[in-house]
Length: 117
Image (cartoon, rainbow, N blue to C red; front, top):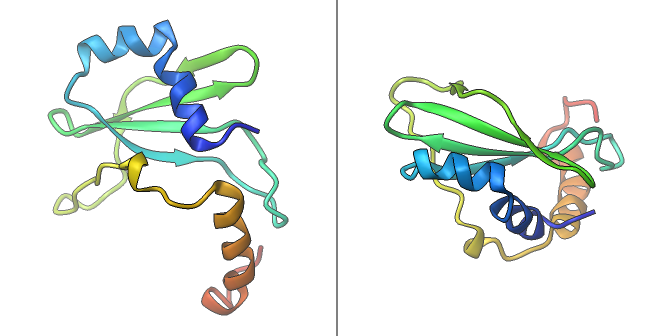
């Protein structure tokens, strides 16, 4: 499994992304998403989201392992009108996905006791 940093590097080398980027220069990285099993295993492919503050819409790139990426059409963001979508600064990420998952699995039962994993 690629790390989020590696996944982003892979996306940024894709012609699909670079063509899209030419027309969406103001958009910024907003999230990575992948549903996980209770044990932390990936249940589907990674999604990488870019938010366009001008349009208020988000574009999702879906990893297709071994085949590159596909792009989903721009869509509305699920947020309150007064909320702001924050930029995800990858240089600020200090721990690996595996380390973050370990911390989550350790703390989830006490932090989210009513949630079923």
